[in-house]
Image 1 (spheres, rainbow, N blue to C red):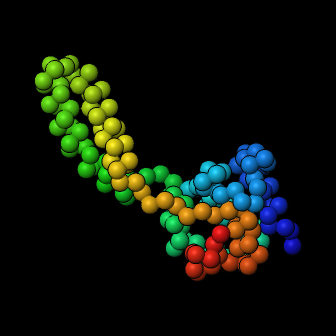
Image 2: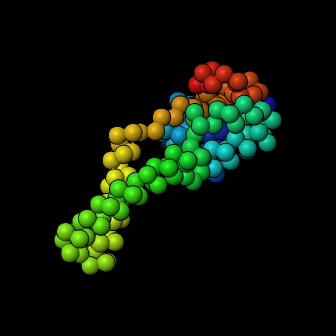
Length: 153
């Protein structure tokens, strides 16, 4: 059997363009290398094809380690909740300062994103767990992703 550590490193370099110098065994996929969402899913698919590793338990644990591609329900609901106060604030600013429609619209966009950043800063999402290259190599050696996510390094 091929060395899983070498195969993971090669895949990350060849298919994801990550410089070899960054690919140490302790490098974290999401946090250090930026492998997340569809990129992570693609990596696991390639590893399954190469080694036959069973990653089915990862489906339930995915949100602990990786983001989904695209928006989240939390982000969508947060955006909806921020639309009302940002619109009200924009209308008030535009009225008080007698702004044109274009300037008022620009103020609205800036207001919405400023509120989005403030709320995101005040209510950060739960941080993702770390998965190192060596930890992933160990999962491959074991033949399956563990049912207990705390066993993943």
